[in-house]
Image (cartoon, rainbow over all chains, first blue to last red; front, side, top):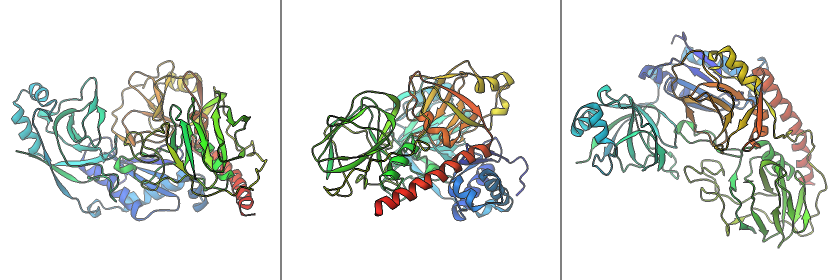
Length: 228
Length: 320
């Protein structure tokens, strides 16, 4: 893999971020996930965790252990940067852990789809058309964040890509499916939030006591299915 | 073998050094705001440094000991009284069964920590006892403590145990101040600030505004601007990350920070100085001083070397 345009910078003195680019794309996201999986499978002394995002991966480390483990480097940052550069050159995005496709049943009734009429109006189409366009696509889980188990997925059809609300709701019910521009996401907990809510699912996105506490993982593919 | 909270205090939570390894699932680390205080008092009592402690704000809880316990308090100084006796931070005391611990006035700092020799009996979630208030999990039922709560202790203390009249070496205790200068390293978007704004970041005093909490401290100051707008895309953030908000004001992300953010990352507070920041409250001030990444790392390395002496010494004392 070419490492042109790859930018590596400190995220404080205990982490560094590897930025593969500044756009939302499946290929950059695959690189981010592949690098993350590389270090999760082959940790170095002092490695704590990796956090893949849209087009970057952040590597968290214990700087004291890194400095001890890599005495030839003048800083832990330099040591981890070298490991990252080597890894980026050798990772193969076709080798990422198998991608799952997950179907999520969604209610689009008025009580669940709080902003469906607004989204339809802004998009100049009927609520049914919005639902059809929304459920026609397969979405990629680019990353998790904001809340435990909250997924940032994309990309939403441009015709219904309505920006987030100007003032956020104080309480968005758990399970709400929202749109923010070309992103879609599922509120894993009751929470304040500004996304346009167009449906709701009963699938638990966050089950704290399970061994795998979140329903979705970075790299998953998601299809929404309307509950009739 | 428990302690009883007669009064809860405004925000008392169970914390350890945080929950790592789950950030990629959106699960943030939480943990003590002032990790140095939590580590020091744990190590001093012969505990694992990651043992759960209570993080208290003022007004603080009133605690009744239903069993003998050896305690230490550190971090912010809120005038602790054990029965009728004023006690000091950074020292250990024997709280006898029936004694009452009160905190009678805010002296300095905003977060005080209580550790108990042997530790609290707290169930762990994903390897940590820290409380995640947003997800309502971890610590004591995922919530702040309430009056009437009991916390159980892991080990029984022998009646005849004498107090050890030593104090944690002052060289290890952070140099707390209501107006500290904390060291920062440049963030990814620092170079995109206008020259004037780079100067403003490093040469003005910022005031901690009232909408500051465990997630982040908002800083009020003369607005800072990018030389030209940057295309930003959400990525991981860190404890101590200083983000530039669209209105030109800053937010420093603290222990309950979300795992990702999409605002320009203009600087990061160095690990070693986070406790100085963590002790600030509304209307306190802070100034930033830029250092290199290597200097930032060296500060931590030097501190950890000194801390090792305390670890060895306290382990020796615990075993003897």
